[in-house]
Image (cartoon, rainbow, N blue to C red; front, side, top):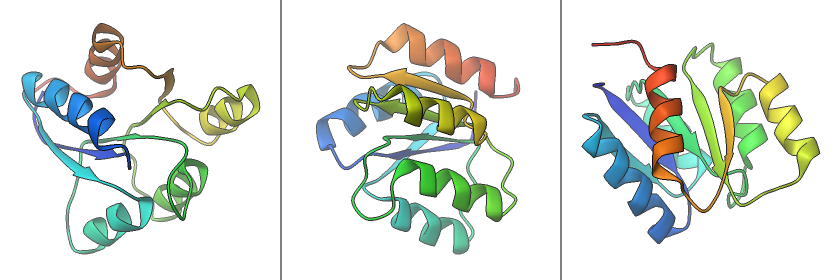
Length: 122
């Protein structure tokens, strides 16, 4: 697995755990604390192979981020890794095009499997 995976999570410890896993899988992980910062980086030319995001973000939430990525016609896998256990929001995320919706705390094998499935082989 190669390329840039953006990790959108305001919780530094959670973001660091995901970053470590992504890098062990062979990709570059770029951590940003908000959806707005991710969108700014994408506008500046950052092209990821995937996005792993928390649902509950400061400012724009995960569903709004998903819609913004879709609006920009970015066809990339978005995986939610979140403490938000509201079933309705999970359904909305999946119907909105999210690749997966996983609960926190992080289960490394689960996220690694989903990320490998989401990305094309090198």
